[in-house]
Length: 195
Length: 385
Image 1 (cartoon, rainbow over the protein chains, first blue to last red):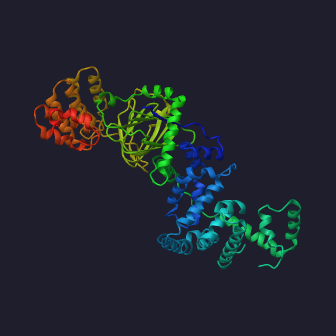
Image 2 (image 1 turned 90 degrees about the vertical axis):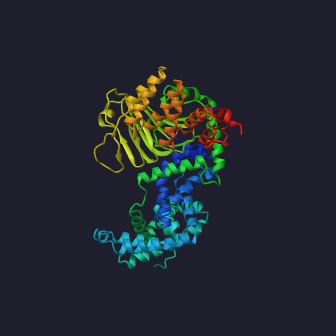
């Protein structure tokens, strides 16, 4: 019987596109490298989209598990960070559709809004009230608006990239972004936070 | 907020989608249009605030654990739906790489570090061993490592850096070793991290299961879930192999307390007993293994010593005593890695004296499981119904 052999070559210099091609071909080391480069950003985007931390690990796990199958669809741009974040956010939205999960989220959002923002004297004393208000307002956004806001404003994707990542028209991204900003701004205004 | 008919240009401008002339034009407009300026400032302020939100990113440990989980599940196809296809690709890729020529170098390096337990264990494994890789290795960028599996023995050779290893539970006849510049780690189903720096093992941390750390010139250390072994400072300063015994350290995760030395040390006696066995002095080896197991019943070598006592007695031709020792081993270590071999010894002796009931009962767990050859051989005349 021929022994199995798996070697780990230096892949630090490989581009994301090269690594994803290797991932598609079954290279675990390349998958590990892509994970090392982008897992933290994906985690953060998913975390913001879900609104609480309870299912983030499952969604990120699911995303990287699917990567060998979806890697061939990567369009080859230099960095796949935005693309991965988009996939993560889409999976997060899908993940949220379960009724049971949704109920849990509602509870979690309640905890987030009340626990973090109204009863956190340390944060308020430190002058971070505006962040607390924004965090609460972000959690209260509809998930579609929040996903767009997370990708564009937090992760820095262009509206076109966010549209591609979410598989929706760019005009829809802009519309949702507009309403998300308006709702967040209103929340900040009502919370006494002036620009 | 605004009735300005150029309000829509705020987003386009902020995204950089306006051409140079249009951008200049809009900047001039911003200077005179209070509404557009306010919206631009509000959106910019919102972005800054959003990016100033507390970072909800995962801890480094969480990320590493998830990484191990991802690589393990991709390699093993654990989630089921698409895993089998991936596994086939991974195995095929591994075989292709092996055939491509790196094999010779790796095998040479790995053989040079052959483990001593294998030398003493009976080579009677008729059952088919899994041919897919048992371990999933996740490497921190910069780590130099290789993984090879041959005849049920899998070795990860770590030359430098940090790897996280997940190993599925080993079946009878399988072994999994991490070869280090200054020793080795043997596991039977676990998740752990190991770091090598400048030719010396720096740290071993166990998440799940148990690992046995054998570093040259040091006592064997057995680490359980949540425990960490740290190299003493002088070892890092003097890489390579030190003949001078140094205290191995096992501490609970998260503890900053000084290292605690293991409670017992049977490593020297164990090495001596192995040497006797190799020198063809099985009677003396059996006595040495017996003394070791009695002196360190909870020690890391106790299980192997107990079994090897039976092996040594069998090699000395003292089959009755070997069977007794094997039976004692099974009673003391019911989940032993060597339980099948011990059971074969007991069955052979029982069959030899015509006690077919005992011979069959001790081998019952392995009958009808593809173990027909060695089970039948051990049963001898008792194999017939």
